[in-house]
Length: 551
Image 1: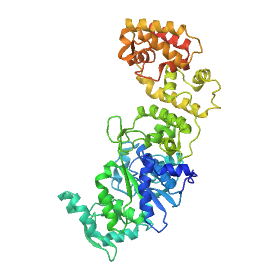
Image 2: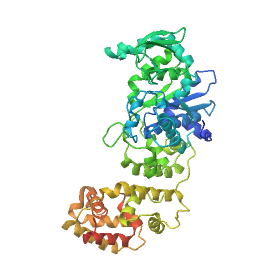
Image 3: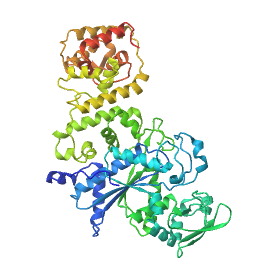
Image 4: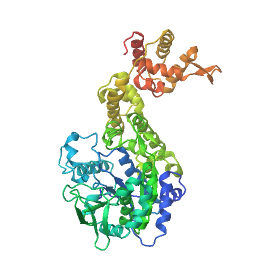
């Protein structure tokens, strides 16, 4: 199933020349792939693959693998000037046995009788039209990918095995059984060596995936013989979905069967990559180019897991920020471990707009290194974002806004001519900010009560703001705020120099303002916030603080 046609390419001479030397990581990976493909003379489609284990609901890491692979695919198309046809195959290992019950299902006891059955044979624990747990999770993956408009084809391991698409490679694996065992056994402990087989029969009686040693592998007949669950020997054909491969041999066999050219995977696969490659080669294939990315971590620094349900889901991110901000997060530093929790969202949201607004004025070389070029496959939209996400969060906090209309009253005064109709992107950001504030900022707000130094500083700030014209801009207001702090010893920073040659202002001053007036540890440039919120409104906030009415 192809979701969307590939976007048109900008193959101007400037773009194609800059692509050859761009240091953006998708281009670096694509250049390696170009060397591989140009050695061939078969004109075959270049196959990009991603894998998904539907043992639990897809998380953002799954999305990231597809997003990053798409970026490499686009870079490859630009480098080759689209001379080679390409495909992206999202492959679901839904024939794997369910070895444990995920924590995030409605009723774990419902699934207990179905342990070790293929995920495509486990009943669906969720309400809905899908006839299996695997089918449900596959559908969730496709829905997420469709949301982002990826061009991809979906493949189910169960369908491939049962339709005979892997029959030839399974027969080859039977023929090369000993060579595969010679690769696998040295990687296992003594106890596991005694029972290991690359073939996993599907029990005709219980439907379970059986981890049993083979008594015979008959390459000529294409069968395996093993001790069944009732203690009697059983012989099954290895074709037609009766038998599947263990996950490590399965990796390499799939690469050989499908002739995969590029696949990325997480660092947890790094030690096994040589095993996958070797098995692929034993089965007559050429191992694909790899890209190994670092793992995503939850708020506790633990690896995110589909079965645990920790970290973020795609739906959760899209509740509080745009799809583009998520794509940006996936683009940045893929070889570095990154925290993937709610508190990364505001920064990602604002960084996306910062990159997008810089893009039009950059030379071509810098544009190809700009994340938005890769996020939008070279077709970067024009974006005007006069108010950043972090500022909107503080505006919601100060105004106690519960709907968009309240925020737009401030925004329209700050940026005349801006309306939900003229800037729908900003209107979308306003909605995200309200939801994010309600769910994450408001519960954590803790207002600091001013001591005597802080009370005097706030009084001085109030007087200073009163002296400014009502339409003072953010820079003028920021200077006034700094002037107040320079006269107060607590907020002086001797390592900085003020305009009069005296000490500069410490960050402690702005931290205090946010804790006193907004109940938060930090925020964006305070002068810009006052310009957006209003001088009179900020003075009223100071009055409430001095009267003990905040918090």
